[in-house]
Image (cartoon, rainbow, N blue to C red; front, side, top):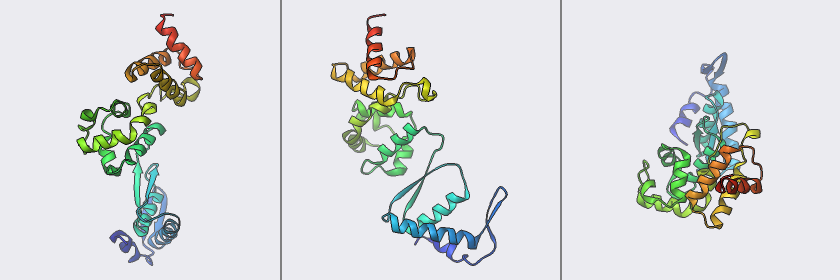
Length: 220
């Protein structure tokens, strides 16, 4: 049990206020009860050392979960709620590489996801090694595990548009793979797809997208 959990145990019977959050007041005794229940569930359902993501604004529940994780031997990982779902998925992929972990992944995400994903996809180890906390050996490891999974992140096109105004990322990814299989370089495939989507963001199928690419190529 970590010191922070023992700290709460020493106050478990106190009726003093532990948390003030807006108009909400939580006493130490109530906090300790909430934490004990959460910790028991974590201990029962997850292995020691498990990482639990928190995606949201600051709230009393976040503190309860943090203390419960300390008691259960888990780690709480607060995620930036400003990131898009695709960016969060990219962060999870980076964390999955042996030796990277949450802290290194957070430090490394100082550049746009698209730029880092492109470097991984193109096996640009020299570029990746310049990221904070990522040396040459780690960059090699990242490329080895993720280079075939980066197309959807390297093609972050129109991600802030409403769903009915943006081409589906899975469709873009499939079109990208098709262009590469047809002999286009990764950079050329991305450039052609970006131009096609910029001209018509309502392309919903891979056939429509590829047709738009080749229409542009013919200058239509």
